[in-house]
Length: 340
Ligand SMILES: [Zn+2]
Picture 1: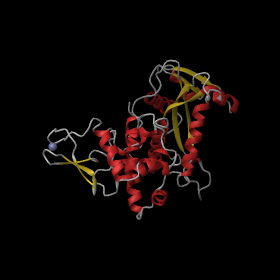
Picture 2: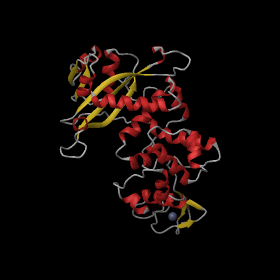
Picture 3: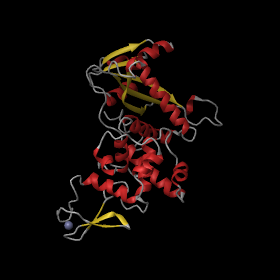
Picture 4: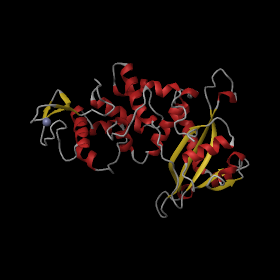
């Protein structure tokens, strides 16, 4: 079973926590997965390069000892689990919940679902896993022949409780999303004309000016890509900036929006539902981190095992920011529109 998890990329991602827990029932199972991820052809000692079955310890599943040089190798080195006293299985189960659960998961929920005794443990785990999502996908989307990208902006509401419904609390979020076409004849090709979302980019922008909106597009989308937007003047210079631009006169007509910008409106609807589900809205200070988390999960929704591995740092390509970086504002605009 464990071999399957590692070897088969197309293995169905567990649809529930109990199902996941049957795949990874204990720390030894998790350690086996880490070992296979690192040495698919069998253990090689990083100290002396000797290959061969290492010593294993029932009470220390995260450690392998070389039979030749007798030195230990930690399985969690280089992962988010390194130097943690939390059992591997708790890390795995937490990463499963974070990578799969659409509304996100709070420390309170995590503690309850995993039966953890301390809130602080749940908070620390979640915090470290989320840090792996904050590094945004840096490459630009689009650029595929025959595919276009929808671009739009929307107001995302801050906290409204006790403050009325003032626009002053709202934050402007720009987004670009790849539009893909299902193969004709597949079961789902009837919905939305067979169109579905590819990758998404989301960023806070200061206003609806051309500088802000086109600046976002230039950072998020490969030049030359076909873009569909509404006919707001802020997008008017996109053709001049090297894109194939189709501006649609929406005029508040939902029929037109459904016809030309259906996918991005779906993304915004999903985003707002999710944000509203988190503590009834998100403050401006933390919004970009949540946009990154949404983007991370959205762009990996067809590859949840990749998301899971990436969260735990198993893939080895996660450079997690520190807590200070996360919330100091240094990461406020990581997706870049200010990079030029
Ligand atoms: Zn050795």
